[in-house]
Every structure is written in C-alpha cells, then in structure tokens.
Length: 156
Image (cartoon, rainbow, N blue to C red):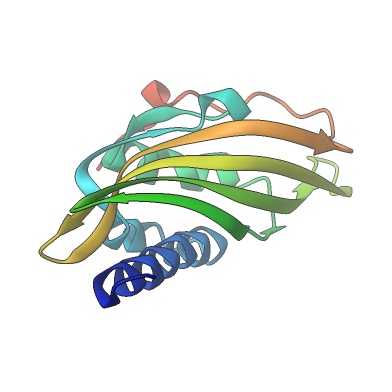
C-alpha cells in the first residue's frame, strides 16, 4: 500500500513531467527554470539534439525548434523508483512534429522515445536534475539541415 507521501510524490512528479511538455510545446523556455534544478544536465544528443546546462539548452531550443511550426510532447507510462528525496524515472514520449522546409512545404513525422530522468525534491518541489533522451523510433522523418550545436548558440 502506498503511503500518503508516496502518493503525493508520484502526483507531483507526474505534474512536473507535464509542465516540461507544456513548456516545450508553448515555447515557454523560461518555464524550464521551474522544471530543472539550476545545475541540471540535459542530454538530447541520442535523438539528434544538444547536451548542456539549463541555460545552454534554453538558448539552444528556440534555434533548434524554429523549423517546427507545431509539435506535441505527450508523456505517459512512467516507471518511477522513489528513494526518499530522490527518484529515477523512465517515461514514454510520443512526439508528432511538423517540419517546415525553406520552400514552405510542411511534413508531419513522429518520434517515440523515453525520458530517463534523475529527480530531486527541492524546497520548490520536485525538479529534474538529469534528463537523457533515449531514442526509440522515428517515422517519416524529412531530410533536414543539421541543427546548430549548443556551442554555437549565444547564452544570454
């Protein structure tokens, strides 16, 4: 039987994962400050993205996502291992995206992956301390120019 604390932790972590998805889908990069710890490491490299600090990723995301006029991050089926004030999770992501080529042509494609997260309880609630995107599959991915590396993006 789950304790009230574990029920609360699970609900708070599920809300945290949803807040991440909405921050990305709404292009509200500053909302990521309420999702990650200030010293978090975010690694999108296996799926073709960048690896860096929260500040680096917040600067990189607008550049990387500019070519996609629409996308949805749908998280589900979280496997969660709670250990006091820390936790590990593996969460399914289904991510339909629309790519807009330079000629204006749009193409819908899909990516399926897992978020592998290390989470910590902070004074502000649960936060992601480490995020790793593990590639699952991709369907109908268009030919696209490479996304600039995080090192080429100016952090403000």
